[in-house]
Length: 367
Length: 214
Image (cartoon, rainbow over all chains, first blue to last red; front, side):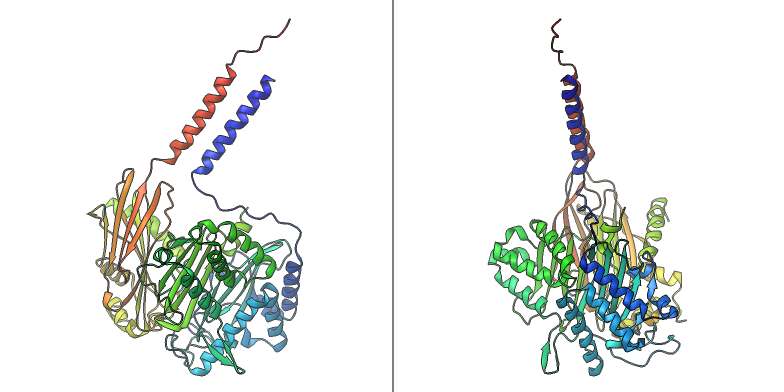
């Protein structure tokens, strides 16, 4: 009996010690345990295999990188001509290859996410036909010695649907980590898959023009992100707005491309200070980014966001009437979303979606 | 260069080279200056990313490429970096703290003319470890303020003893005031809890043994 009591006390001491050490710093949530690969994973892996199957050796070599390659962080929102992407350019693919590439992107994303991607690409085609935007530079011939399309340096900005690139990092697998990178002007989609789950961070959906007409329909690639943001800020009472609205202008993304691994001090109103309907509006905004990813993975991520909601901030800067110039940021322990009109132009929007604990699937692939 | 300055310079330069990355946006007529400040116990790191817009890039390029040979030498880059530093100020608890040049990366001049080239300036200020309690850090960036767009943010402190409690900026983000607290070493909490637990265990082990019937 005495031995049992002593053992119990030693155990208690150990637990207290471990708990004390853990108090020193909040640790990121543990990685989800790998389980049986899901139907979505199998579908994405099959789509990747189908895409790779359309390529010859040279093309496959150009499209694939090791999982730990520096290509992982080599993404941008910039157009071809001033940023050199690696991988395969859509405009260089055959219709069959291009179809397989887009089928892979579709498999990894949700229906709404894929639609958002194509709306952004179509918008860039509109931008090309319009001769470039006010705050987006002007297209021109490729610079001499630039080394072909997408060359770096000079004044040859190139827009349009052909200027999107696809790359795979690591071998498509049901168990091992790998990554799909798809992007071009105003778009960077980074999907890291590990077994049954996948993550979308960091990704950058943007739009210019923010609204255009295609086949008689008005398309606003980031229209919901805009409208839902304004809906939330206007759903707050005066005291809540006072907490949420920053006293200064924010004219660009704070954690855009190249800002990997940075966590800024959060600001704004805590979601715990919002009522249930306001929290629902906030989660609905978050889903605009989280829900780009396939439904299974997005649902898991939304569960995580909901669990962290009491520690999530909403910050706003700018006009509160829809149609005005406004920036907002949503920041929680595993989430950063920024929505930022560029250079005073509401027709030119950049956004970023990050997870400071899990960009590029860091939490999933760390041993 | 003082020994202290050298100590600041060497480790930062290595890190800086590893994180050099493309610009975030192609700017037209604004000079974007984005600052991130990391508050530590014995140093404050200041990262400033400067992206001149297309319409002002040639002017910035002239200031950087002082001999006009179309290339930016290390000396020219450092000279420009130090020129920017003269426009920055840092004050801790009311006392001016010198900001020391650590490193600078200047992109190709051709990239600057497209509004995509970002000058990455890294600087730091050595401070004596502030005592427990409340502290105030004031930062200002007045470099080419007439034509610039500013962002300034504090990074979440890497040291858990430092907690930022308030942030204030002017409308244009030229200035940032950070209020933060420094608490006693968290390790003491750990030792205290471990000590109490150990005492509890030892105390229990000395409890009188129940008598065994013979």
